Image (tube, rainbow, N blue to C red):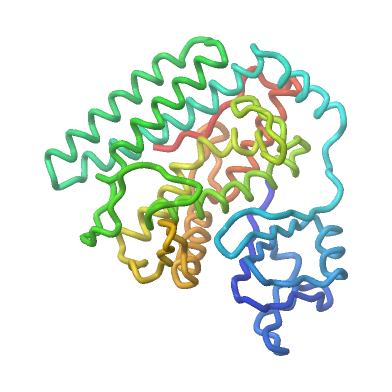
Length: 343
């Protein structure tokens, strides 16, 4: 079993990363502030004006450690990694499946089943614990609608039908997302999902958390030998990691949504930790970004029992397990792709 390794997040603007033996040295204003051995690293994520020396990039690639470069606000710019370990036969089969409407629908249906089951679990738990009877009723009603969508997905369906069910169920989930937020400040109110750009602090946090999760899932796909760009649920689009987005769906409520809700409900972020732009966009300031990164890493370190394997592992390892399970399905080693559904 692969050990879950830590991700080094570098947010300090002007930081310089260099190779120091078999370790990453993080230097700021000429002084070494942190040293991380390669053996303890699963990945490096750099935000904004962070420089990485060529010798370090080469050493990290040789050790199978990816380096992701994101904008200061979480938009993925580039990723460097070593040679893909996967074989050409697996990728050829993946491409054949992606060209098959029936095979694509089969994988997409499994991904959506996992997503909606995990979303429903979030809503049901919140409904049981909510102090407001009206809010609890709304959460229960949304959970019931998600169950109806899950029932529809129990049988084979055309790909466009699967996509339609996923879109409608996602709208049902976010229609009651505001009831999951328990912050008294009205500036943490949530009405609808807005992405480019996010229009409120909740959407800003969600977008940033999803960017982090996508980077993890993308790396997991590549490590399993799959092409992260060619998906089944998400249509091909230049520059879009379709398969990573597919596998991320079931993990959104388990990791990213939970991180955002914990940050807000535990008062770990405040409205002044955001940048309110004249255009209406809301961006994370440095304090909010650092708080989210800490909680994100803590969530990934939590232990869970994988529902298919029956093994205990950290939540951060789940993307790698799911990518490998999908690879086994595509190779014909298993009869189905089992999404990770946690209660």
